[in-house]
Amino acid sequence: MITIALSKGRIFDETVPLLKAAGIVALENPESSRKLILATNRREVRLIIVRASDVPTYVQYGGADLGVAGKDVLDEHGSAGLYQPLDLNIARCRMMVAVRKDFDYAGAARRGARLKVATKYVQTAREHFAAKGMHVDLIKLYGSMELAPLVGLADAIVDLVSTGGTLKANNLVAVEEIAPVSSRLVVNQAALKVKREMIQPLIAAFARAVAAPAG
Ligand code: PRT
Ligand code: MG
Image (cartoon, rainbow, N blue to C red; front, side):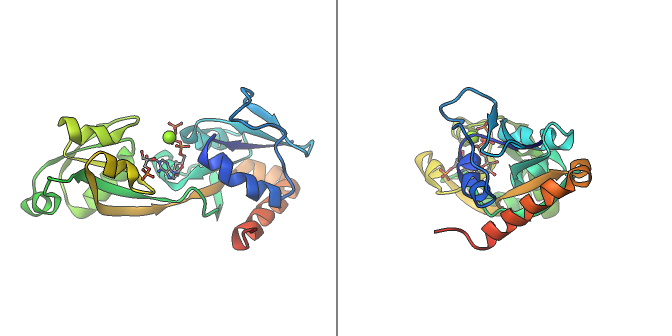
């Protein structure tokens, strides 16, 4: 049996075509089913549905053999015990620094001001500002970062941006790109050895599907 960990929503939706290219079709839809373990058309393959930020943990400890996780999540989690053979090029977005429209970020940076930065991505933010030599106080949030500058909790946020619609709706502007983000295939290193004859063809099929997307 091999177990693949996925999160609901955009990662599941964008992984479906890759699974299909590898001959794997889920027998249920996680949006309508409450099941956390989904059978597939292949008796020896099952999917588990976990929070996006829990995917690396399941794979690292062998609760799943493989998984799909955003680079944002992997950077925060660390890569211990995880083999990352493939950038799947899905769920793409950018890790950005954003501020209120009326906040002079460049000026504050130039003056060496100490900024309050709210984010779910504390590790990523710490490394980014340290590399720039900027002093920041990091405020850990678990969601809705866009609110923090609007109520004076923070001067800036570090968050993912895809269409830019959320920033715009909240009178925020992106002022700096930290990194492009896409989702990666992650594999448990022990499973790769023990179940190599099942996992290797799967990685190969995913790689072919990424190189030549259908449609
Ligand atoms: O929702 P939950 O708390 O369970 O976890 P999650 O938010 O981490 O999961 P999910 O499914 O929302 O995201 C899974 C992965 O998708 C992330 O880890 C990213 O790698 C990737 N991804 C791609 C995104 C986005 N695009 C994205 N736009 N994840 C989140 N967003 C959010 C962003 O945080 C912001 O609040 O969407 C909002 C901005 O979107 P735009 O289109 O308005 O710019
Ligand atoms: Mg979300």
